[in-house]
Amino acid sequence: MENTENSHPDSENVTFESRLDLGALSESIQKIKKELETVIVGQHKMIDQLLVAILSNGHVLIEGVPGVAKTITAKILSKTLSIGFSRIQFTPDLMPSDILGTSVYDLKKSEFEFKKGPVFSNLILIDEINRAPAKTQAALFEVMEERQITMDGTTYTLETPFIVLATQNPIEQEGTYRLPEAQLDRFLFKINIDYPVLDEEIIILQREHSLQNHGKLDTIASIISASEINSYQALVKQVLLDANLIEYIAKIVVNTRENAFLYLGASPRASIAILNAAKGFAAIRGRDFVTPEDIKEAAIPVLQHRVIVTPEREMEGLTSVEIIKQILENIEIPR
Image (cartoon, rainbow, N blue to C red; front, top):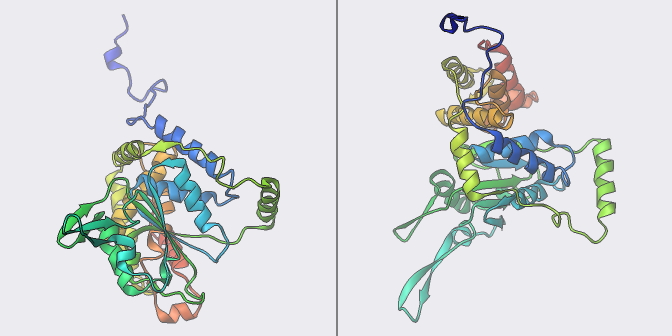
């Protein structure tokens, strides 16, 4: 009788099974992508980053010139998720109470009653976030970081999931203001949307022509619920990450603080953001473990808005993205 106890563990017949069951998650991700791609032409990297942000429970800042489908992308994404959705248009005269809510005196009860603002929802689209005054920007700090609001001494905890998708026009545009570093740091990702190429522009026009009297969002199906999103977020946190990859993330972030081309480096919050986002990228690709490629893919959208280029290098036309790419090239990839 063959002694199976002494069989070589590295035999070719050995198969490795995924430690986590990512089947339902992967199926949901593919369905959401299919729905988004019925309207959004190209922008595959942006779609992946939005989905990773949701799985990582992080907020997203989307930047691009007017008319490149920033707002419509957020709307379509919200329709694929069976959760609460709220849109807030930021303007120079917007007050904190306009987004958080306000206390109204109830004559019948002879007491003040708190009327919740539009921020009390699951997916919040903030349009043109860099057009609002500093007081309104500051009102978002506690909401985005703590997922709670304190009004008149009472703390209101927001329902999960709670994700902010904010759009902004480039700061060179008329009537825009640069967001403070403290608020930029609250966003997991900053996604830049460029103009479509010629072939994509033609497809956009063809689809618009074929719509006739139908709306872009009319046929978008709802794919996953709030409870499913919460369970997927918990699942993603369990994705494996080797100790040498944790060290790799730390080296990348520390290098931003020591880089001569950067005036301001990334904080430990950025390290945690890369870790969580890398797990998200692994999960949407059906893996229960993180690879160096996942970390490199997460690094640019996580870091580009958290670092500041020195004035001298900025005058030379060097961008934060180019510097981050240099850092990634110079740090040895763990094997």
